[in-house]
Image (cartoon, one colour):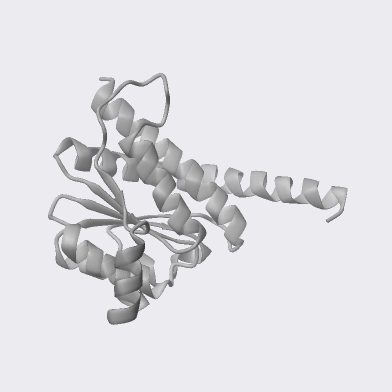
Length: 193
């Protein structure tokens, strides 16, 4: 990679975030309010994704359970990343198929009043799609954190934030920015009013 390639990557990231600002601000705010209401009403937040989106699920759950900002001393917010239990993931992958590993956990843990954050940069990950379908069957609100136009997942989500990009790295960078905004709003709504 040449020095000018570094500048191109940074510029592309900035341009994607400018598009996010102009196209998605209202959806980011509205989904944050849905998450805040879920917590306020005693619900929990479930998260799932593959690869980098699995890591994002864990990152977001940690920010909610522990805290986003060290200056905010608050109670834990109930959030579970469905990506972390290797025994469930491997048994599920072996016994019921990898396409069902998240849906099975939604079946086990999802209750009416909860929210599933379904993260996929393509919007077409089969195991995320099936988790969202199971969530809908159980009365769990589904928020899609997506990219690439939203894929097939956008059709079954209650709400979506679709990053206006087809570049996986840019989408993931925006996903974690969106998640930090969500966490801040949830904290402010539930613990600082």
